Length: 267
Image (cartoon, rainbow, N blue to C red; front, side, top):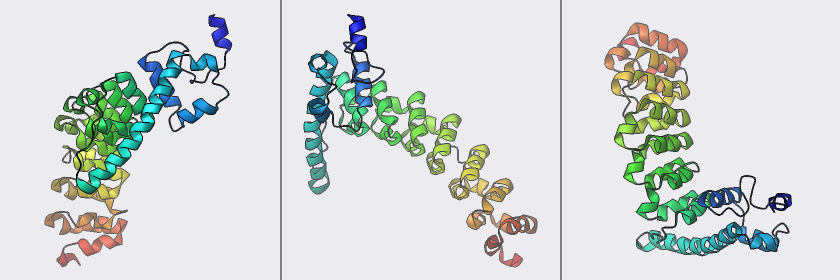
């Protein structure tokens, strides 16, 4: 029997196993079919013969697809009302984690409408975060303090750092990962006074110097790193630095426009 199954053309993706109905299988199928119209495929695809239609996993997926279609229509209408007449945001009353894995694999934005118990599910939340890191906003507080979850989020979008627990905004690995993805994430960090962190950000984008702690905006090495691309880096430096002939001279050699931000007595 197993040999016969192997010979059949699969329609549920390379990682799925026909006849094995569990959350991982459903997630694999939903991921494989992301962006595709499942109901249309079920009606038109020649690869889905009666044997597959009778398969438990396929029946489950098609059933979920029907629910997804109705829910999407309902949520679009509800979302429109939310912005026009302050209708409270709808929460979907489903607790079946397999169904939620299907929905989130299809579109991580469904997490917005999930019950707290679903937004506490690490696997489901991680699936959403791999699509868009800023969905961390909708995770429960315990997961916002989960280092693995936050790393997943900031790796996809550094701006997700703003939704992390305070202790993780001071985690060097997490902050570095975030600013490597988006230097603007420095603004959400608790490490704006960390010289290595700031220098890393400025090396990627000179304008990040404006997000650093005041004392580092006057740091000679950081200024020299930023000034070639961003003459205004000198603007927020201390009066002492702006009056230092040697430092200003070095900066102006890299970018003559920096001279306009020097102390009046040097102009």
